[in-house]
Image (tube, rainbow, N blue to C red; front, side):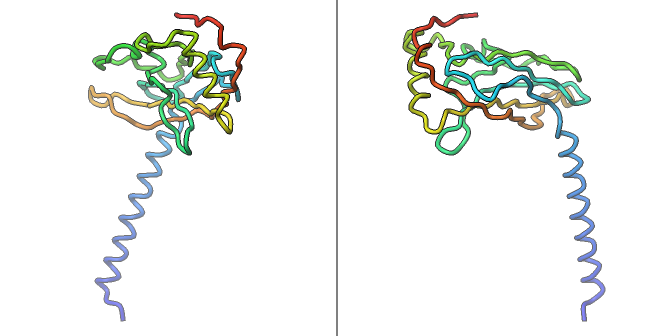
Length: 187
């Protein structure tokens, strides 16, 4: 026969486990829809600019960092020369996050990603840089896949606190050799 103390202990453990599960589910639903990524097409040529927006769908101010990723060897990784897409200067200089720009609930942030914009520290010419990307895409089987990762943060007692990553739908990059000699537009 099972002792009463063992039954009480088992019931207490079940209650504690249930409380943990409920709090975890509440936390997930609270962060489920913080931001929404809009305006992406299913495919782009290798060096086409990607215009999209990130909308704050939460009820609180959020701080965002947005990065491009590529699917390679069965997993997602940063695109070459990663930088925060909402702050292109981060491509060239180290940033110190002092007083972050937060996005209000309901606000939308329009962004443009130019994959073939050559960083100044890359020694290749613009044309060589573009050609290398296009050649890599043309050799990619299946098609090169990219997506955007939005890192969502909130201000918690004056400190930036990471909440979660939100990912866009993947999109294809299709090689277009005709664009290899096209000039790169610099902002």
